Amino acid sequence: MKYKRISFGQGKGSITHNNRTFIANNVDRNRIANNVTFISRPIVEVYDELFSGAVTRYNARQKRNDRKIHGTYYEHLFHCKPSNSVITASDKRKSFYEDVVQIGKMEDSGYGTEDFQLVADCLTEYMNGFQARNPNFYVFNAVLHMDEATPHLHIDYIPIGHYKRGMDIQNGIAQALKEMGYGDGKQAIARWREKEVEVLNKICQEHGIEPLPPEKARGTLEVSEYKEQRRKAAQIAVENEKSQSELDALNDELKSAAEKKVKIVEIDSIETKKSRFSKNKISLSEEDFENLTNLAKKQIASVKQTKKLKSENAELSQKVTDLEVQVKFLTAELDKYKQPAHFSREQLKKSAEKISELEQLKSKYRKALEFINSRALATEFEVFQHTTARDKKLE
Image 1 (cartoon, rainbow, N blue to C red):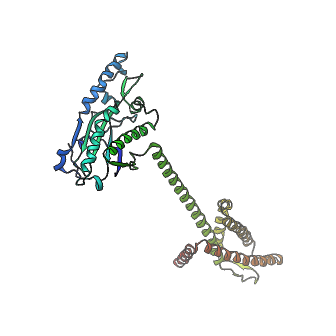
Image 2 (cartoon, rainbow, N blue to C red; image 1 turned 120 degrees about the vertical axis):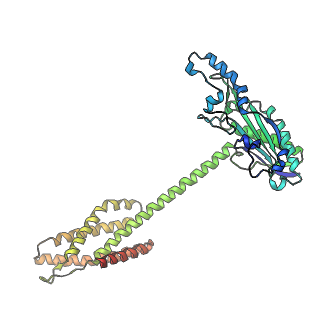
Image 3 (cartoon, one colour; image 1 turned 30 degrees about the vertical axis):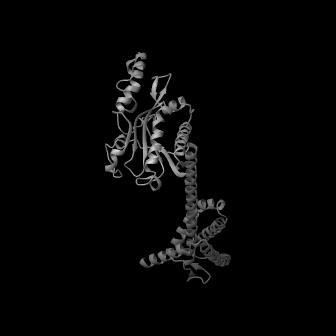
C-alpha cells in the first residue's frame, strides 16, 4: 500500500491560468498538450443560460421599472462585465468558486516518478463523478494539469440556489449546499468538503493508495478548526499587547521614581554656609535659593501623580511616602528662609534642629540610592548626574 497526502483546498480562481491563456513560469510548455480539459465554457454564456430565464420571470412580476433588473444578472450582481477571475459582490457572493485537488507531492507523485500517471488516473475518476454528486454546483471549467510538478485538478463552478423571494434562481452557495443535503450555517461547506474527500479517499484505496489526511491549509481546514486557530492567535496577540503595556507602564513608573530621587541629589548639592552676621544663621546664595524654591514647587505639583503608585507597587509606594515627607520638610525650610534676617534665640535653636533633620534627609537619600540600584536604574542615574555637571560647567 502506498501512502500519499491528499490536498483539497480553495483555488484563486483564474480561468486564464487554468486554460493556459496565461502561462506561468512553473509550467513546462512541452507538456501543456498533456493537460486534460473536462469542460471549458465562457462564463458569460453560462450565466445567461442559468439565470436569464429567472431574470425575465422576476421582471415580469415588477410593477415599478426601478425595481426591475436592467442588463444581465452578472452585471446586476457584480457591477462589471463578466471576468475570467473571481469577482466578489458587496453581499460576499462570488462570481464563481474554485477547488484545487491533488494527490501526493512532488517527491512521491511528481513528474518523473512511477506514480505520476497513477494519481492522474485517480483525479480523472474523481472529476468524472463530480457534477453528478453536486447537481447545484454547475461546473463550467475543469482542467487536470499535467504540465506542472504534480498532477492536480482545477474545478470551477457556479452555485445554484432556488428561492421563494426575489429571483427564483440565484447564485447562492449557502442555498445550494442546503439543497444538496449539507444543512445550514457555516459548517455546511466543511461537511460538503469532508464528503468529497471521502469519495476521493475511496478512489485512491481502490488504486492501491492509502490516503493521508488533507494538509492543514486555509482551504482544507474544518471551519471549527480554522476558527479555533484564529481565536488562539488573537488571544496570544492580546496577551502580548497587554504584557507589553504593563511593561511600558512599569518602566514609566521606574523612570519617574528615578527622576524624583535625582531631585534629592540636587537638594544635597546646594551649598549652605554660615552667615556673616550670625555664626548660627544659615545662608544661601540667591541662585541656590531660587533653585530650591523652584524644586520645591515642582515636587509639590508632582505629589498627586506619585500617589497613584501607592496602590500599584509596594516599594514605589514607600518611596512616594518618603518623597512627600521631604517635600513638606523643604517647604517648611523655605518659609524660614523668607523670615527677616535677625532670628531670636528660640528661632536659632529650632533652626539647629532643622539642620539635624537635614542630616536625616541625607540618610534617606542614601536609601534612595540603594533602591535605584535594586531596580537597575543606576546607569540612568549616572547619566543624569553627568548631564547636570556638564550643564553647570557650561553656565
